[in-house]
Amino acid sequence: MPIVNRLAEFAEEVTAWRHDFHENPETLYDTVRTSARVAELLESFGVDEVTTGIGKTGVVGVIKGRNGGAGKSVGLRADMDALPIEEATGKPYASKIPGKMHACGHDGHTAMLLGAAKYLAETRNFDGTVIVIFQPAEEGGAGAKAMIDDGLMTRWHMDEVYGMHNYPGLPVGEFAIRKGGIMAATDTFEVTISGRGGHAAKPNETIDPIVAGSHIVSALQTIASRNANPLHAVVVSVTVFQAGSAYNVIPQTATLRGTIRTLDNDVRALAEKRFKSITATIAESFGATATIEFQRGYPVTANHDAQTDFATTVARSIAGHDKVETNIHPMMGGEDFSYMLLERPGAFIFAGNGDSAGLHHPEYDFNDDLIPVGCSYWVKLVETALPASA
Image (cartoon, rainbow, N blue to C red; front, side, top):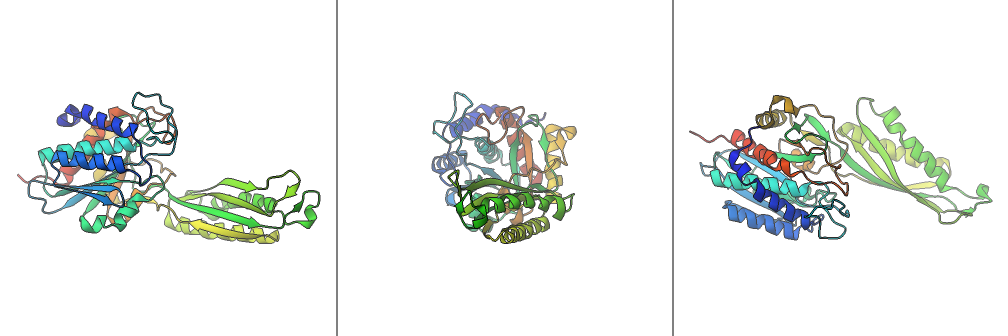
C-alpha cells in the first residue's frame, strides 16, 4: 500500500494526539478543550490562517499552496465531538470523563486531518488552497449547519468539499463509497394521543389511547410496505411508547416517539405526509386526537457523481483498485456532512476500521492502524485535485 513515507514517520505523533482526544471526550458544542488543542496544533504547523469559534466551537485552517493560494480551493472536514456513553474498552487511554466517550471515532478523524494538515503545511506540494474544517456537534447537534450558518462557505471559498468516516467491519486499508445517497435523512417525531381515561373494568366508558397507539404503530409500517416504491428505502421506527402507571387505570394520554429514515427526497416527503395522515386518521377513528410534532433532521448525505469518481481514484491510488468498493449499500444512519454537500459538490467516503466493535458501542475503539491510511488519502486528494505547477 503506497502510504506517504513522511506521514508514516509521524504516525506515532498523530496517534498520541488521537489518544489525548480519546481520554478527554467532549460532546456536542462543548468541544472547548478539543478545539483549543486543534487550533494550537494548526498554528504550530505554520498553517496560514487559523480561525476559531465558527459554529460556536468549530475551527477552520487555511493552507496556501506554492502559488500563494491562487486558483481552486478544496475543503476537508473532520468531526470532533464524542458521545454520552460510558466507555468499556479498558484501554490505557480510555475516557477520563464519566459518561462520555469517543464511540464513533471522531478522535481519529480529527487526528488524521491534523496529520494531513501538518504534512501539507510542511511540503506545500500543491497549487491553490486547502481549507481544513474541524466541526463540533455532528452527533445530533447539526454542527455542520451551524458552521455554514456562521459563514463557512462564504468566508472561505471552497470549490469542493470532502469528508471521511471510519467503517467497522471493513478491513484497514480498504475504502467504500457510492454515488448519490450514502447515508440517510433522519427525521424524528413525537405524537401525543389524547383519549379519555377511566377504570380498567369499564373500558366502554373510556377512549383508550393505548389501543389507538397500538394500531398507529402497526399501521405506520405500511408506509414502507404499501406506500413507498419497494426499491426505495424507508425505515419507520417507533422507539418509545409511554402510557399509564397503574394496573387498573386506562390512562388519559399515550406518547409515541421515533424516527423516519429515507435516502430519497421524494420518499422523505411521502413518508412525512403518510405518517401524519395515518396517525391523525387512526386516532380520530377511535375517538381520540393526535398532536403531532414532526422534526426534519439531517438531510440525505448525497455524494456528487464527479467528485465520487475523483475520490474513488484517489482511494485506489492508496489502497489498490480492488480494495475500493464503489457501490456500498447505503447506511440508514444520519450524517450532517450532508449540509456541506448541499452547499458544494463533494463526496463522503468510508475507510476500513477493521474488526472492531460497532459505532456507538461502549467497546468501540478507533483503529490506530488506519491513521497513516487516512492521512495519506487526504494528502493524495489535495495533491491530485490541486497539482503543483512545474
